[in-house]
Image (cartoon, rainbow, N blue to C red; front, side, top):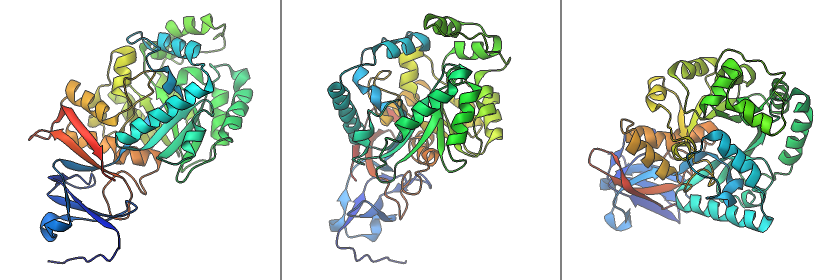
Length: 403
């Protein structure tokens, strides 16, 4: 037996019933050894250590959670938009009610960040349309990927002024340590071909993540297949003409695939209507495709969930997001995992944990330090309780951040 001796002045040895490194099988009575900055030095067995030197817990140790999709700037809108209305009325509610005084907006953003930190979230993929979140992000309390989102409602002639306005906001972000940013398209139904080209021209090719909302409501696919449905009425109410728009006869994701850059990491968000064939088409298009699911938001808005079996059967790289407090009751990755476990219980806990940690870290390009319990990383360490003997996640499960 080989023993490793550590000479660090400040060192913690944290042990629990199980340790889930994510990159390997769970370890019974494992010990995670880290320095005072949270950097993991080793993952070992309890029997190799003097009990008096250990912090002993009941439960499961996991890496910190990665929330790949949120609109932090909308935190002040909690409870303002009704549930169950469908996406288009929801969007209308956001557009018409999002204005508020800055003190209210900033307070809500800070409270939402605190909620996520307490819930074990260590990194966030955050959609920004304004600079409202930038002051909070500058403190660097978690690792952020800011997606500066732009849209021109399919109006080709507005693409240039839209990208210029987006760049102006983008340049106001003072990156905190280990944070990142990109300009991204909102959704297929709201971004013209010209704006896609402008986004691709601005962003570097390769090494970044681009987020896009995808196939969240039936009228989205109907618009692209037939140029019919509720989006025509939605745009008409705002005086926006779709006269130049031509239906492709295919679903909306194919429009996105035709205009996104396959050399970047591309994160498709929501995907409640995405089929096996479409998932496979995207995976064939690029080896850097990731999928974010936000189940509680999907239930809040449209009362539907994705077919997770389609993603599992195609080896899709799934991640977990919360969306915003406008479309959710809380910002908790654990609550998203519990919803999937309750309503689509065939998804194993091992999948849920990987979606909530390592896959999310890879999707944001943060897997150099986050997502798994590995020596050299600083992923945060969580204590999870509420798994039964069959490794099923109970509805009473809780999480506590230890590091």
